[in-house]
Image (tube, rainbow, N blue to C red):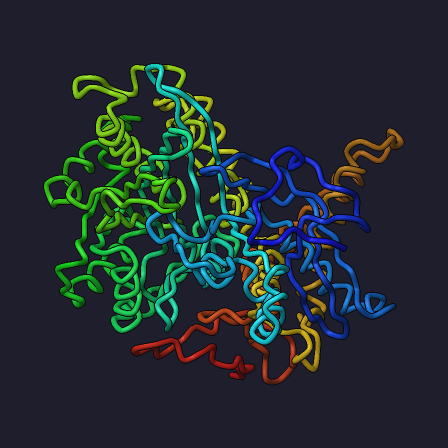
Length: 596
């Protein structure tokens, strides 16, 4: 097996296809150790998606697991782990380059002549755990560095386009953090290290190709969960139970100290509703910001649903105006010009702040706001590049408007699928600039699909993330966590419901004798009663039917049986929530059976 060196420029003439497995391969994704065996994850197919300043960028299209021990995958638990790991690798688009550091924004690019993995931003080095053993070997044998390929998880689009006869590359790169990564309801808020759920850095690029040099404009935004200890606890209700555990001052301080160190001043745009179900999250965030009392962390509240109700989405401009009033326009953007004769780049300006946007999920409302702010900044950049005159607007070019809107809408879908399992809501506005009935219907479909996935399918998806990212180490576990320990009554009740429905349908549609009308009615009534009881039981004990993660215990919830002391029969299920969170998460309290 041969691999191209990270230090050599990829051959652009033969980048769209790679040889079949067993010959030349694009690269190694990592080496993992499951319960009994070790596996090399090799990239067997990679698709070229474009050039970034002359560097080829690829998306992983296929992969193969190669077992280093024969026969270990026949073990049932080993096979279950392997299936989860494959699911984790397939979870979303991963990108890499042999010659460009995709984990860092243009402003953070290093000119040091060292391997890419040493330059990589630890937050966005998605396969860092998977290649950790290779990194250890590389410290003593530098040749191993050629096999370490930093991969980012997110979304990348590189599009050659033009505006007013000026050609340039318009690009969008979203990088998903590997810290506190997970699914919508199983990963919320902040941890004791200051990492927040669903943290993404999105960089919008305008690159003017003035061969053999480039002029680059970069604008970075971030999104991330509200940095307090909070959760929405699944219980089969459409709106899960919301709990605020603590405003997490010390953890929030860690989070913003890190953000300031990387990006500069933080403009925190909060889009959650100011009433109803979301109000406690808004209040907790404001309490944390007030306690921080940091002039470099500026809080801006925008009631998105109130201001934009009636499909008046253009009113997001009110938020942009507010940001300008607070000085966000002064944070600027990053700009550089290549100097080929000196083999270096001249930094013309830097971005000295960032807009950090969140709603409840950091998906739908967040993307609408981020795309609007990106469009506003793009206008200033195109004027600076003399592509536009001050009186002109890029929105006047229909072709480019379509490119901009569709790229941002695709970005919304990719980020949303990684977290919620479905595409984003409100993308009809991002794509078309207006709210449509068709878009509203699509949002309804996505909402229903989210409900089903978040309650019944996200447990294994969360496990897949935890396994690939090294949050769970199978070889350190004595008893695999794949057994269903719920009481037989709880396990059987869905089958009772299914059986009842089948019996009712059979009675209604199968042929029957003419003299059985009364008996059929009684028969249907009996099964309706059984079905009603089964559905009541499932609804009442909804926590027992949520598909919870099995590999890593959640830091806010656990299931407990309530057992009758005399009969030993199950009476119900309750949530084991934290009763005390002070400055940091102290871990999940062990569930204990209650008795009367």
